[in-house]
Length: 401
Image (cartoon, rainbow, N blue to C red):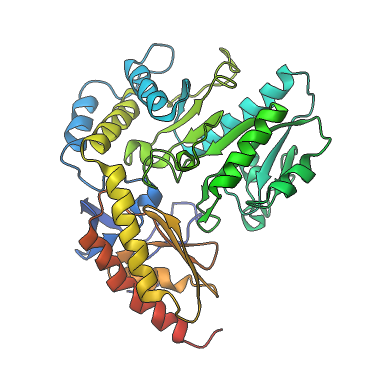
């Protein structure tokens, strides 16, 4: 496989560094390219394909919905919105939901909620705490909240009103906000995805929750990538036994159908009124059906338990094969959201794994990311390790550039 084999895209904007394959179809945790080559899917569309590919219960449900109504607009009530919102509130312990189409939109809505929360309290220039290495999207506002100078470069001036702090350091958070009456919210990912699979410690989350309660700040938790059962609970922050005030969701909620949501608790649920925010595609009947069916199938097939069990097995197998190997700095994450950090940039592993029949990603330059479908089996987890471990060892044995 070489770059010359890449499908030509002369009319598509050059915004992605693509691998030289085009995928044709999938079944379960496997996909095939247009040349007939098979791949084990360790990426799940970047934590999107919760139920894998061509799921025998999801596909007929979507076909049924397409035959009835795909889109109607939010001028009218959409029954599926109430159905999915009620389920998300049941699972999260929160109270109200706004639907959109992407994680970026959900995070943008959360930032607007925080600003209006401040303005409603008489704060003219609200400020939001965000984190080093965070990733919340690529709109101008979410890009400003993101903690990656590389993706921000060339898009200044960035939006003001953000205070950046390091992960898992409650004293740093207290010092950065001390005596500042403009702070209105703390915004973070429970487990940073694009930033390199960096988890927030459970005790730290509890400390932040207490600080937000003390100062009347919104605790806003971006669960776009780590939510929807990926860690073995519906939402990763639930391991800490806390409730956020605002929780953006997307990715795995629709098993591949574009969908986003902002789930809010009592402190934030009624900040928006008619005209404050909106969307054309958000909450459409097809996306709502996808979300309802995804959750139903997850519950009936016990996919949270599967994510926890298979994820623990996969992590242990990776540690057995790669732990102690010179150049492997860390193997971290929870459930089926795992990262292998190496001591050097390792983007070439993306191509080498693809050539060996495994799809994955490399994020933060040196972290191999695995976010496969939640239907992954123990045997498939072992297959991931059998393909990946030799590639990593071979790469690390090469002279460093």
